[in-house]
Length: 445
Image (cartoon, rainbow, N blue to C red):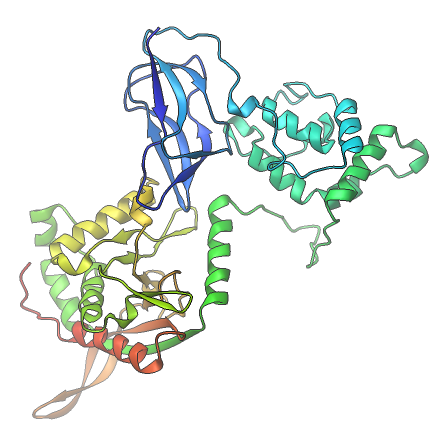
C-alpha cells in the first residue's frame, strides 16, 4: 500500500506550532488533492491544511485540541484507495500529567476504577478516548460528561472543552452535590474530594440574573483579551490628537473611483492613502518604528504596517502590509483589498499577521470620530483614523480668511511613553496630517 505522510507545513518565520481545531475528514473517507483535510490555529489565525494527493485518510496522528510542531506528521493518506485499520493515534494515548492536573494517587486510582464511561452517551454523542481518559482522571461521570458543551465537529467534546470545563468545575460540583450526605455513594465522595483538592470553588464576582445568559469566550476572543491586558500592563499609553483637512483626498477619490474600478478591478478606499502617509512619516521619524526588549531598543529596518480588521464574528485581527514604504498607491490598494478580503473569508495565513512594526486602525469605519487604541505589542505606537465629516471651517488664503465646507477627520496616536515622548508622538501624528492635507488633487496612479 502506498502511503503519503501529511506534514504540518511551515507557516511563517516565527510560527513553530499549531493547534488542531477540527478534522474535516474522518478515517476511511476519500479525499482529493488540495482538498482541505484539517483546520488548525496559530496565534490568532485559523487556516486549513490541504491534502497533498488523492487517496483515503487512514490515520490521524493528532487529536482535536492537541498541538503539533511544524514538520510533524499529522496524518497518513493511502493512495491505493483502501483504508487499513486505524492504529491508535495521539488522541487515544494516555493523558499525560502535563494535560491533567495531578490528583492524589489513591484518590485518582479509586476515581478511575469507579467511573465507567462508554463511547456514546444517551444523547448519541460520541466521546473520543482522550476525552474519556480525561473524564476518568477527573472523576467525571457519564451523566456529568453529557452536560458539557462541545465545540468540536457535530458538537463533540474536545480536549479544550474538557480542560475549560475542569478549570471552572468547582462551582458546578458543589451545585450538583447530593443534598444529603447520608445518600452519598463512595463514588460521590471520591469525586467531591478530588475536585476539592485540585479546583477551588469559583465564586462569581458579579451577580447573574435569571434572564442573563453566560457565554464562554471563543479561543480568539480569549487571546485578544489577554493580549490587550498585557499591552496595557506593559506600556504606559499616551494619546495625542490632530485634526486633518482631507478635502483634497475626498474630492480626488470621488473623481477617480469609477475609473479605478474599471481599469484595475479593485475598489480604492481611503485606507491605502492613510497607510501611505503613515509610511512616509515613519521614514522621517523612525523613532516610532521600534520595539523594546528590556532596556534595549530594537530599531526596525523595515516598515511593516498592520491594519486592524474586524471579522464577521466580531473579533479583531491585524494583517500586515510588508515594506509599505516601497509600494505605490496601486500596490497598497491591492495589498489592502487582498488582506481585507481574506480576513473576512478566514483565509489569512499565519505569516500574514507576523512581523508588523506599526499599526493603523480605522475607527471611522464604525462612524467613530476618534479613539484611544491599544498598542499592538511588541510595537510602541498605533494610530486610529476617525470618520471623515463635513465641517464648517475657516479657510486661510493669501487674499484673506473665508468660511467654507471642508472634509475633516481626527487622527489619534497612542504611543509607549517608555520610549516615545510627547514631542515625538505629537510631531509624528502632525506629520501624518501634513501629508494628508498636502495630497495632490491632480495625482495620477
